[in-house]
Amino acid sequence: MQAAQASAPDALLPDKSQIFSILNWSTFTPPQWSGFTPPLTIGTTLAEPGAIRTDFGGAGILSPELEAYKDGPVGMLRQMAKSGYVAPGDPVKMANAILDTFEAEVAPPRLALGADVYGYIKTALHARLGQLEAFKDLETDCDAA
Image 1 (tube, rainbow, N blue to C red):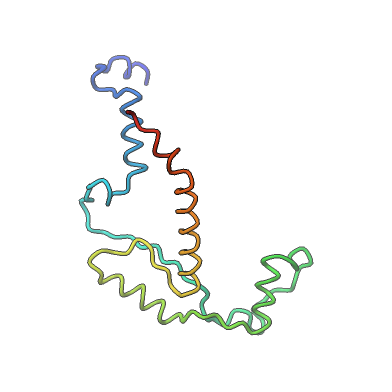
Image 2: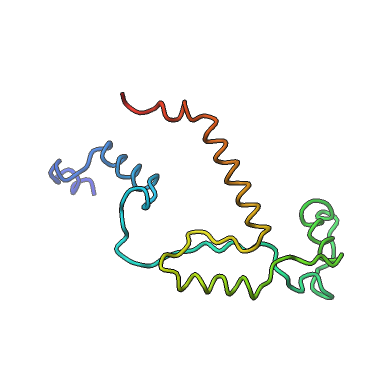
């Protein structure tokens, strides 16, 4: 391997700054900002369902309770299931919403399915934007003069 690298003309081997520039551009620049149009028209959608109405928690579905998991998130979910919690999400509507994206000219990059998950995602994204804006002056003052 080293023999091949040693014999290759230096002009064919990019230097470290070129490699970093390529990685930096491709990794941190979304295609819609860079003007790059992918050659294929295949879209990808991240479907994120909220709580869906199922018979989870019905008779015979829950395993025996373990003391180590009685409290915390697992215990909370168990209590919800046993208490008859009715999730807001309609599985048929969610499936149809996913199918509707198949006909879209441009696939949505993210599809929040249900008002509950829409609210969670929106809150999280606003928090991230606030974190970004809090240091805007410092973050944007890193360009060459």
